[in-house]
Image 1 (cartoon, rainbow, N blue to C red):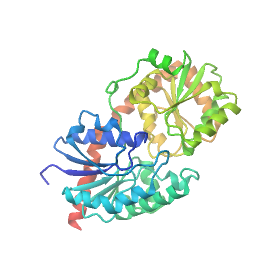
Image 2: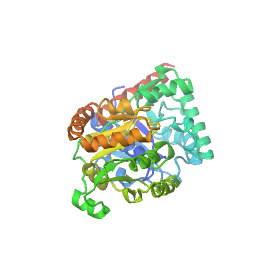
Image 3: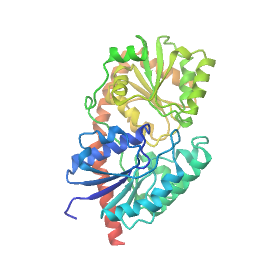
Amino acid sequence: MNRPLRVGLNLFHVAPDAGGTVTYARELMRGLLAVEPETQIAAFVTEQLPDTLTGAAWAGAVEWVRVPGRVTGGRPWNAFLSMWSQWALEPVLARARRLDVLHGQANAVAPLSAVPTVATILDLTWMHLRGTMRGRDRLGMEVVTRASVLRADRLIAISNAARDDLVQTLGVHPDRIDVTPLGVRPTGSTPRTPKPELRRALKLGDRRIVLCVAQKRVHKNIDALVRAMSLLRASDAVLVLPGSPTPYEDELRRLAADRGVADRVRFLGYVGSEDLEGLYAAASCFVLPSKMEGFGLPLLEAMQHDVPAACSRASALPEVAGGAALLFDPLDDQAIAEAVDRLLGDPQLAADLARRGRVRCTQLTWERTAEATLVSYRRSIAQRRDG
């Protein structure tokens, strides 16, 4: 195929507060247009399309196909919307635009599409950890995921750990899976709120910031990090938790009060990209205590900002860290506290981790993600053509 690829992206799941899925959608589109500028992209979205997508410099090169509907706020998944879009609307939109390939970025792609399909299976956390999703959402996700795994021409996993989980849990043959790790953009490519202004606005004073960027969901294990704050030797540290409120946040607030650290744990709610960039720049260390991750993009983003990091020795996180972060048992509160104290109390260690983190970030860029994704697209087209 010599002409430019015509790519359809299922972004029905993307809402303003959808965290890493927004980043994945935005940076993949930017990367595709940077690597192969002639690529034609049709993005299928709901009325909740985030401004961070439509306001991007490259957004004019994308056809934004808006359909009625909303992703229910506060839920990981809206089963009705996803299944409706997957089985009814997507194939119609794809045929009308004579697409070469249809890519579902969050476990869902039309199983009966006449167009070659690629499905990114972000993770299977909801299958392994109870409480990750409500019953109806979990059922919807399972139906959608299993249909996509069964029918997609190619599957994308965002880490080797996620690929292995697909093989072991759902019995997918490894040859059907393309591993396309996520990436980071160069530091400074996004404006940031200056540190003094940020500290003043968020009332952080001059305390050292222990930053955790994660959706407030049970498997993120933030409760262990809150408990660890009560065990820290560093009394001037404050745990900063940006992100939209959830029912789990109420539990975290009660836990912080019970542990006597309510004044050392700050819940910021949703923060914009400039404030988030400012938080990374102002942080003394970064901690990601998740019990399970398909990738763990905030860990890489922290490294990109020269922030020394620690993370769970679980699923994809050691792979993403690549030797550039301290590792701990996510079920051991004392081990988490000791890791944070080491990051805050050993300047030489912190500097070494920051240096290694910079090197790691050069190995994982969004341009490489886009290149690997294009390979997967072309494999799906070839497989459909060759039967």
